[in-house]
Image 1 (spheres, rainbow, N blue to C red):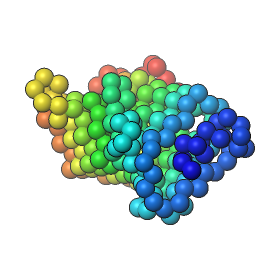
Image 2 (cartoon, rainbow, N blue to C red):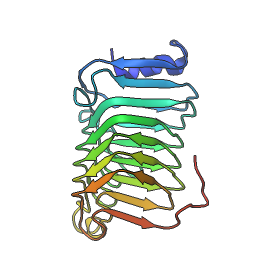
Image 3 (tube, rainbow, N blue to C red):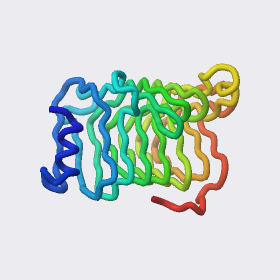
Image 4 (tube, rainbow, N blue to C red):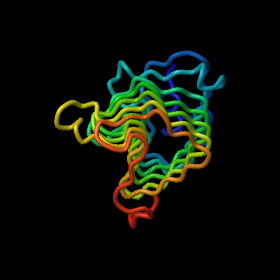
Length: 219
């Protein structure tokens, strides 16, 4: 059995709306996705993020994707690593027009052009006790890329040791936002640590461009 199979059961109606998927300790070589669904679901690592790993390195995809999900989505107690993003997608995660809740979740050792740890697009997720670390972006947002009216909230999170501008000549030379790159978006950070991040061109920690309280609004 896979995490994706359990998610598909809820999305398809084979399992009840609002189900909890309990993930046992171990390493799961997959890249889960929730897309186009109004169903509610919790995916929980029963022993916490230190014991339950989702490794997407064989999939060459973002390690977690939540697209246009209008139900209540909660991700808890998991580590996502080895994800690979392309244009417009993060390596660790991509949230588009969705606002999941994440608790005790780690995104580490992922890679993308922008938003290596994750991309938040027209979304307002909530992160509590999460860590985004050791991710590498070719251009913008080694840890996070937050764009297009998104309004995420981070509480007691750590964003550390991420790198932007690793893409070499051209793309890498304009690398900005080693920890967090924000464009026309409005994140809130409460009691968070953002440290040890690096960027080739500018803003090793955080860069904010465009408008805070962007007119795009929340998802």
